Image 1 (cartoon, rainbow over the protein chains, first blue to last red):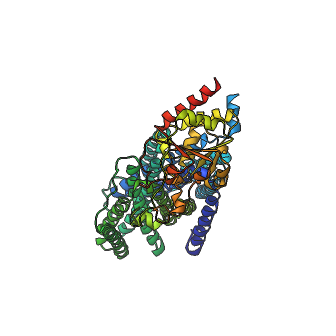
Image 2: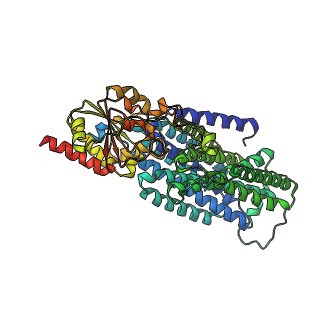
Image 3: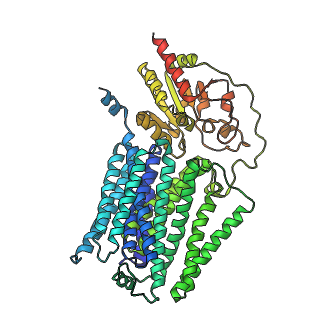
Length: 100
Length: 489
């Protein structure tokens, strides 16, 4: 059980971690970075599963299914798109290697 | 199904490893060399976290859950595989909106369950009677309730706002919707959402039946506010808005993670929230705007008379331009989004390769927010096969322009306009630019004599060292290639 100030510390440390990591990412990777962080918040799927798993009334189940559906789309789409973009980044050495 | 008592510990451990992998994966994005491996590791962490969640005790509705996961993953995977690289910004907006909507929906479910605790439960309810037992263990304190409330608010705004951003970038909604008193109406919607939400919380705590109606009102008004807030913002500002909504979704996920006592959600959501905030700031700065100005301002309004531009535009034909670059020592190619629209990146790279084979030192100079998203142009060039070590960003290339023999501008306009440095009355004054005008010669490939995205005259085109090569980007690039080839024969 996390509560009170412990949670506040987690919030704070995670925020600084995010800020520091991203500050070092070069401009050329900003689009993959945005879609990569978009993928990371796809972890919301785990929460959606828990919410749906505890849902009882039809209204809750309906909203829960919507949550799972949307977050599953978020996580898969975010991953595919990011991976596709990063795959294309090559240096002159690797491209020349392919020619030979 | 009975599970061993140590199962929750295993689940917690996997969540922890997933959180480590997320941070590590994002960290590896600091270099294009390691970035891809990083995202794969983050993906493994994600898959493990999702699978292990099925092992949590007391979960119901497993069948609809599995179906929804498979359907969501399959659909997004299919779309994500096929979408063109030029359409990447709206895809990110769409996927981000889905995450925000999910976070809002989780918060809504939790609030509904909270409200329900006073109600008599009908025995005839068909779905899963034992699920009712689970809800008795729910205990939401004041902090959890407030965060659930904030998560719904922010997530819902991110959801509908991102969908509008998607529609605008996709070209389904070209107009900006501006009407009188818009800001006040938006403010009223927001205030209405807040009032409904707070009253819903109070009524919910006291077990008052009004809580249901207020809760619905709260969710609906939050969704409407996301739309209302995004409608007046122009397409050019969408990158900033998408990045902001990305941060919003991260925050909403972190808040709902707290409500559900899920550390992986808290950490991942918070990291994304902070990262998104930073990216949003960087972007707004690169566009010479404050975030408030993007959200509430109108571009180009006010300001004095623009300076008169002296001189005339001097045309050049492709053969001469090709010769000029063939015998240059250093050439800088400055592509803008117009190049991507004309699908000219492959031809331009072919041309650049011919120059490189002749011993010319070629570099690509990229403006930080070139394209429709920061770094979008880098992705488009990477797709065309341009190695990233030939690509220089603004701070690196600007000092090199005075030593550059030819700067070839294709599809870029406002970001090379020297008035951003010289004319205090210009709407783009103070915006950092690529200092192309400092190069010995400038060749601008341009479709016609029109103005740029911001509707501003470009002094660069009238400069003494500038020559205009009129034509469609792809056709012009083709002519340049032909020009080089005739040189060799």
